[in-house]
Image (cartoon, rainbow, N blue to C red; front, side):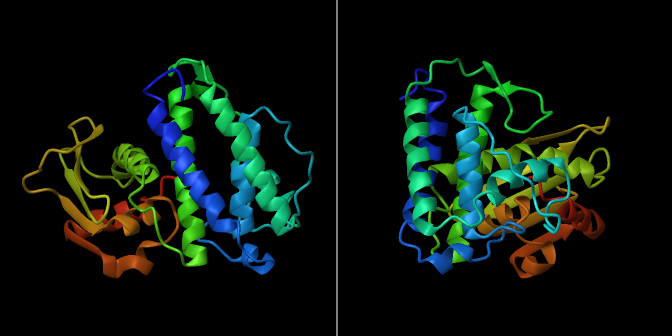
Length: 275
């Protein structure tokens, strides 16, 4: 356990998700590692490689020296290029090599987290180049979020649903709710408007984003009378949209909107908040 109770929920959520992910891929045959996921351009192997790579960097391991092929259509900017190196360098690794490295990385990282002595608000280096440092608490929250989202990527690829209401799912809910004001502002919601998100399922919530007279947006759980737009959808549809794993037109039957149709369409077009 870490020295700080405020960090432990994120460590527990990360641990549960990465152990579940490890259990999912352990018995996979060689060909199953190549199954396509909803994460653009990435197979099951690629998703696991990404997780291994990030956790190794957080352990302080040197980044591999590797040149990327020129024909990777999903690599469009410096962020995706940086992420892709850890993935591409493992694209020809065998199933035993992948499971062995994942297990070893999990053991090392778990030990590091158990021995963590830094304060929650201590600044730590961002895993992406050129980004401002972030607090240790935010880093651990984002790792719990990232690993849970990728666990779900692999579950959908392998058709083994589960853990949609796990500790990681609740961390993901909080991360995605915090991003809602930015979504609504990007969609051009007018000053004085209110947009309601009513999400049902194993993780359910209702939140209202209000835009004040100066164009600033905030989110809370209070009920809005006569909102400009109301969205009603299931939890899985919500997080898949927010994480860029599907497009609004593909899940239109799972989304109900009431109110300003033009604003609703704009919000859905700006719904993705992950890189």
